[in-house]
Length: 118
Image (cartoon, rainbow, N blue to C red; front, top):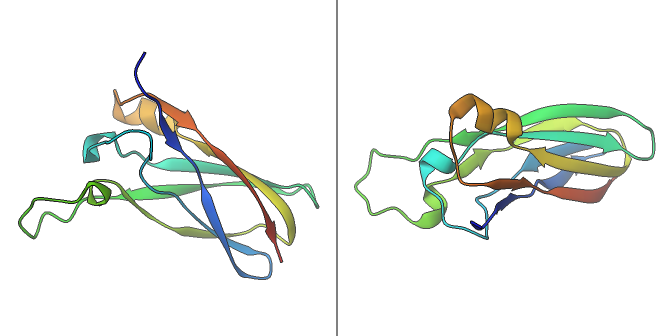
C-alpha cells in the first residue's frame, strides 16, 4: 500500500472573525508539482453554526531561475482569508474534487484542524 500524502489546513486569526487558511506540502511523502493540487477547505463555526467553503490554490513553481529546486518549492499555496465569525472553528481539507479535475495523483488523505477565532 502506498504512503498517503496528508494535507492539513492551517489557520491564522488575523482580526476578530477573520481567518486566513493555508496549507503546505504533505510531510508524509515527497511530491512533485504534478501532485500538488488545489485544496478545498470546508469550515464550520461550532459556536454559531455558520459554515463555508473556500479554496486554497496552488502556486506553480518559479521556473524563471535555474534549478535545482528545494522540495518545498514544488508545492506552495496562496493563502485565502474568510470571515468565519468568532468562536471555535473546525476545518477540513478536501482534495477529492481537485484530484478528480486534474487526473491521477499520489493517494491523498484529507486532514482537519480545530482552532479558536477571536
